[in-house]
Image 1 (cartoon, rainbow, N blue to C red):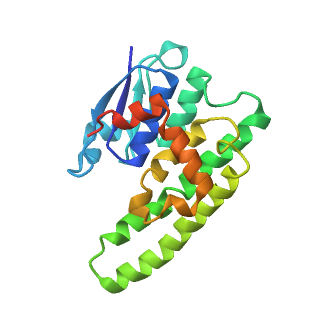
Image 2 (image 1 turned 45 degrees about the horizontal axis):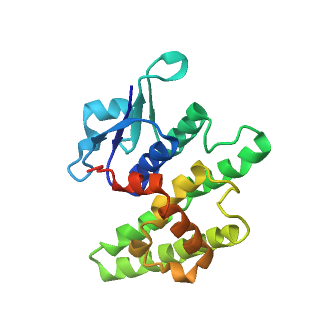
Amino acid sequence: MSIKLFAWDTPNGRKISVALEEMGLPYTVHPIDIRSGAQHGEAFLKLSPNAKIPAIVDDEGPDGQPVSLFESGAILLYLGEKTNQFLPKPLQARIPVLEWLMWQMAGFGPMPGQVHHFLSVESETDREYGLKRYSAETRRLYGVLDKQLGEHEFVAGDLSIADFAILPWAWRHPRHKVALEDFPNVRRWYETLMRRPAVQRGFAVKLD
């Protein structure tokens, strides 16, 4: 049976479609139109009480029982555990994957998201302040990522769910007003991942 993916065409939605493709798991897409407020519908709230995409339903969960999950980081961890892929078993190797996954969830997502928001603010004064603040923090985070990728091929050493979490936010770099030429290690990593057939399928699947 296939996994049901409830998502929309956003970086957080793309994290899961890319991971599912890389892990070779069958899935079906159930678009949740966040523009129309579908994320606040009663049926979706039962899956995702925070009214945020993505969520999944796996009819073949632990012990063969159905399970639903919300929050993209939790979903990535679950899928890594389920498939024994892209999530190392030894704790020493797992630590950097967890660190960089949490780094994305806490910063490299919320901060660029604020850039997206302030770009659309009508008040010039409010827009200027917000963009200055959050653009600076977004560029700082790109710099942190660039330094890490100057020392490792992928963010946690081997390709992992941490890369799948970060990649869709880097995919939005034009909206962040960030040129990857300014961060050559990020650019190398980004172009390497975007050439992978499974990643291409993960970005090509229709989520809206």
